[in-house]
Length: 383
Ligand SMILES: [Fe+2]
Image 1 (cartoon, helix red, strand yellow):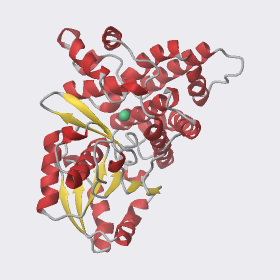
Image 2: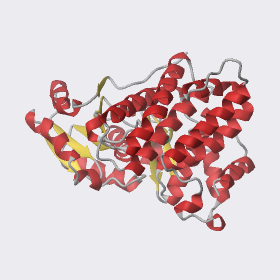
Image 3: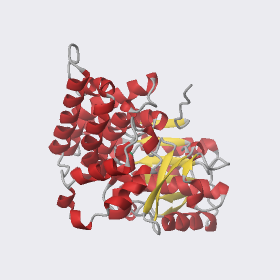
Image 4: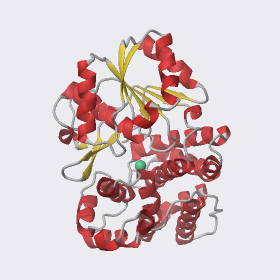
């Protein structure tokens, strides 16, 4: 038996940002806490969010204090702004970081406690305060998923929360909000989306519906990510990437992820590297190991990446899939080695990161459970 989670209302396509205010009004909300970051707060995106709210007479307060890899402090600051201003719902505007911070603020607003209380699977008792999740980067799918990630700055770990009570009420995916994103961000978030689709396809948690969603996402990403990176204003490519993240997001939200994410979370928590870059670098490394154990799972990946799989062995399919992933990664300019990001092997705490990867909430979704030694060896490959 499988349960399928997706927000109740999902606005997708060019110009949908202009319509979301009417949906909010219909639901009767009065005052929003807009949760975002400094970059978006000073860009031309925020006025595009505010205009439809003002048109419907809905009040708002802007909280722009979300950092990349959002911390517990970001969450406490946002919660204080929500309570001081008497807001009755949240509008999250951004990529993964504002979406994740908003999810945690929403859960704490109705459940109390501290972020650490919600680490793991479905730990909250009450539904979170309603969230309207407006996505501005084609990648994380955080606007439609029940997962969120908050960094515990004291322990230097990323806490993964999987909680059905954190699901947004309305998601908004408008490609016109994404055209100004720089090429490196488009590449990183696009490779994060590819990682979601691939991990959701090879996990034992995949089932009929989620497999088809993953395949659709991979096909679109292969065709349109290089175009979106080459020309951010290519609206056809941006719209295709919006469709890809929606498909891939639904897939992993319901099938789960795997060890690429478990290991990527640790790199983000300790070295503050962009999540999508960590995923992109780790994807071929981890999938090469997965393919040794479950090569048959890679037939679908290879097919979605363009291989005619008839007559090919599972091993051929896996080798093709991994090589295509590496080619795509190189094409969009993802670094191959951690040294290119200024991290030296001699300073790298292999044991600390590996131990935390083993207990990351995404690890059980992987086709096999690596040992500590195997995890250390996987991190070594990044050098
Ligand atoms: Fe991700």
